Length: 102
Image 1 (tube, rainbow, N blue to C red):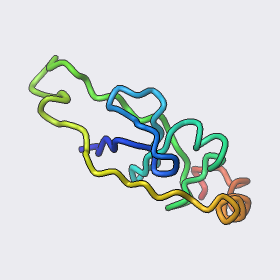
Image 2 (cartoon, rainbow, N blue to C red):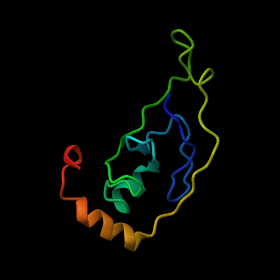
Image 3 (cartoon, rainbow, N blue to C red):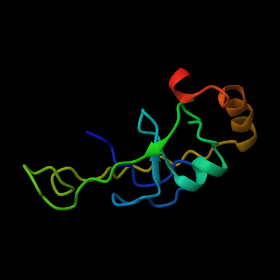
């Protein structure tokens, strides 16, 4: 089950379950769209992968209990601000490689 983390790992911006600003990598590292674009350059600082918009879990029980009420968002905040200079160096080394080839 996808872990809907409550905030951006870098800037700690709230990212509620219905946020269209949430971005995740394949390991579910969670960042806001602004940090992904302006700071991270679409390179996850934890794994080197890329980011995609986080899916929005339905608030309503449309079918078989597959909704926020049955599967609530995570409560644990993972606020781990990145070192921007170190990340620029890390991202520069792999940013030219397409995500599917990293």
